[in-house]
Length: 111
Image (cartoon, rainbow, N blue to C red; front, side, top):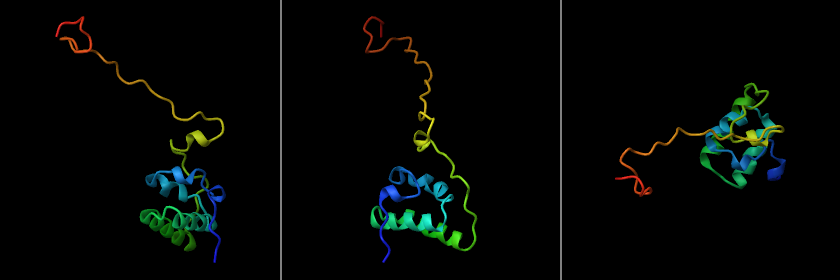
């Protein structure tokens, strides 16, 4: 029987924190060995059916000749893990203008 890989041995950094929705993009960069490792880890730990189905489907694609992507797409979830990046930056929202009739939090203005 194959040994279950540990989290630190997985080919995807921070696998446990990747949202399921972006996982398909990240596994496109894995070869058969990497997919097999992630699949074994998922079955032993999370055992999430949609993730297992995605991994098994991708593994079948790779075994039948699908190309492995050179580099998985970088997403905001993993941007902070890359050297030289500081992570997502906050952007200011639109200015907030109080209503002309005042607010209950500002007793100086009439309501």
